[in-house]
Image (cartoon, rainbow, N blue to C red):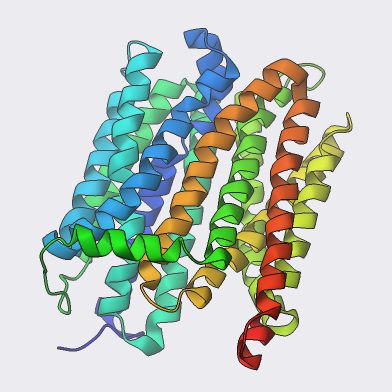
Length: 404
């Protein structure tokens, strides 16, 4: 049975299908983020409560990632990914008809569960079906679908809310997702190198606890939690700041701010090349410092300075995240997929906890409070990176030391 190779029709179809699956997943996951001010106004809830529309999804997603990876071992890769994207699309359409905020949150909890199907399985599918010489290209295209989807969901919702209302935006994205899901089913080749096996929760649990005994991995999981917690906090509440005086920006313009995510496409690749030259730990610390500098620049009153700060903050985040996430596979000597799942658990759980807790700081102390909260997270990330440096110096082999 042949593997998918670059230059073939099957390789192209598989990559476009997984790009589409990643696009759907992350467009639907993050589409409520630019709507938080609208939820506060329409449902009469505080910013912290409004942020639950994103936080409950990422919290359930963080746990479900571990479960879906195991489920796919028994039930198949394509089957579960198909269920995931169709269910996510249908639930998004249902969101548009939520009679109250409680029902909206319930639907977002259900979405959090089904969202896990793609990120937990897609990379395993590629690792099994793609020729090793073409795997790097395939992974890059899939990840780009994630980032483009996350950006598109935010921008489309902001634009549709400006010209129509957020309910129309939900229906539009839901219908678009159904169409793209049908393409995914048609385009993705059936697994040829996958063999189902019984669910082994005992082995899964043992593997997870083994990783939790490694202090270096614990630091990386903590970095994932704090980096993403700070990142989501800034984007959750910057909308509240910009739609109010003295800026009084529209929902459409505030939604377009998410376009700065595109700088992450460059910084993640650039930081990876820098880490090969200067070492992971040093480059990770630089990324955190850039995030901190960007956060501070959002404090002055000038809108232009704020935007520069947001760009720097975003640039540093994607660079630091790319280093930390790649470091997990290097640090884990076995069961690397489980280690990556734990990293993603910390990543999305940090999004949930940080994104909602930041709302308390916004209500109590305004934007200064939000930046103080984010700064505490970044200081923690920086401290954990120093601990990683110390651990790296204790590594026995010279090759391992160079990676730090």
